[in-house]
Image (cartoon, rainbow, N blue to C red; front, top):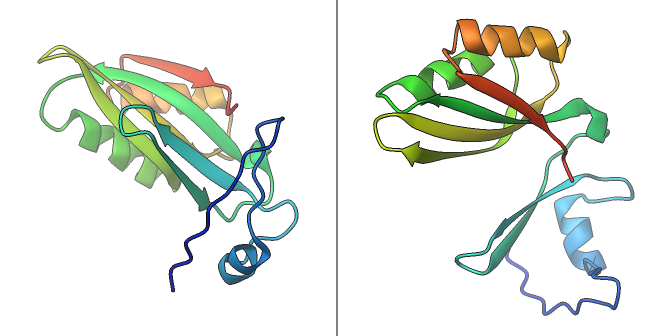
Length: 134
């Protein structure tokens, strides 16, 4: 069932998610939500992500070659590592040369340096940047 509500932003930029919506989605105190804003379409999407602790997430900006199968190799590498992706967006920077893939994923059980090495070796990433989730 869809709920449509008009929300008001307070002076500190906060909104209140109505109780009926929180209850129907299983959102409780300390639940984590992922917000994706699109400045072009002027839309915000908020999705419960089902993780208890923000430290379980990592945000990466991965530079790769813009060639057929490049994104698939990287996505397969995440799958091989058994890492779920909460969000991903790929953008071509220079046609037939470079693209950037932004990913929010579960943190691996090993170091981020090891993750970077695997993504470069198996996924053929050119550059990996670890970003703040804020």
